[in-house]
Amino acid sequence: MSNECKPDLSRRRFITGAVGAVASLTVAPGIFLMQTTAQAGTKPGARWGLLINTNVCGDCNACVTACHKENGVGSMNRPTTDAQWIRKVEITDKSTGHTRSLPVMCQHCEHPPCVDVCPTGASFRREDGIVLVNKHTCIGCRYCMMACPYKARSFIHEPITDQLPHAPRGKGTVESCTLCVHRIDQGQRTTACVEACHSEGNGAMVFGDLNDPNSEISRRLAEYGGTAIRADLGLNPGVRYQGL
Amino acid sequence: MSQLRLILSAMLLSGAALVLSGCGQVEAPQMMQARGDQCVEPVDVMRRDHMQFLMHERDEAVLFGARTAKHSLVGCIDCHVSATASRDDPSSHFCLNCHSFNAVRMDCFQCHADKPANDQHFHALNPHGPGYGFESATDTANLAQDLETIIALETQKQ
Image (spheres, rainbow over the protein chains, first blue to last red):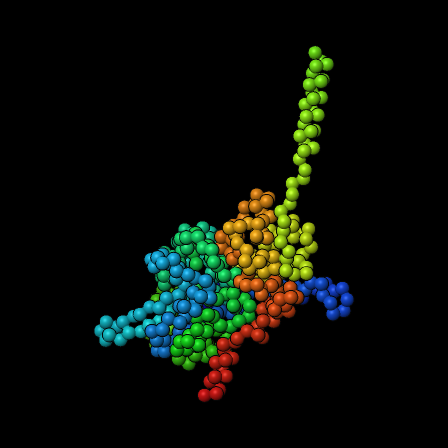
């Protein structure tokens, strides 16, 4: 289950991101002309994931609203084509009538089908397990949307003008949940949906490092277990559910 | 005959010289003042190589999450572009002003925000900005909300 692929450290990565070294130019003691910090990039050995407890998740919509606000995803008043990074899904057991409501977003698979089918390599999986679209190389063919068993991806059909600085979005590219990669790269350890779920919702979501046995998410998974949606596909998603 | 040719060519030359003398230097566009004291690189380096920095580091940032305070497009915009600038009016926008003058089309702003989130936004290296000194993840990590710590504290309380 957890034989994670570890990509080789390329020569370029080694040179540019090997050390968190501070290069500075000093004029006089204590006065810096310019100071830069070469940042190492993704946290080594990490695999970010989410754990959603559907026993606690109610019929609120806080995660969806927070996600779309955080990333500037607005509606064009065309529900069939509006971008959707996260959605609430209601499932009912027909025999008992028992219902569950749960948020579904990009599941950040270890073996993502969207990456397999992408003809330009724009759909990729970062070393820390986050599956992203490199919009610089995305040609908008939408193969990844077809391949994704979770229907997690959206296509932008119309020109957009009010993007947020940390969340570039543009016509002709595919997008999906980024696991709030802008926050993770800043060193924050929570996503907009998880934050909203704790402040406004029922506290059903946990974000954390699945590879760190001492993280809250790993401890909860070790204690109570968790299932993946469509586990039969063997994609090993980073988003896990409890109570399904 | 050859004299006539000589006179004609002399007239043509002097005419051309007259026309040329009428043309002054093309006036460069008025660039707006940046909101910092100093750019991340010397001005001549930025004028010549800014596209190389942006192109090279965008791949580092997107593919490997290696985001540096220097050479980030958001950082450029934070200092150089006013929060009231608009891509529809290139003369109000630092990047578009020069790009439209030089007739170099760029498509950064089809996806990227063309202005800072608000007036208080400065480059992380700008000493006037609130982000100064917190330019990398290693620094902001201490300030950032660590959900796991919060949860651990909450469970301790209960």
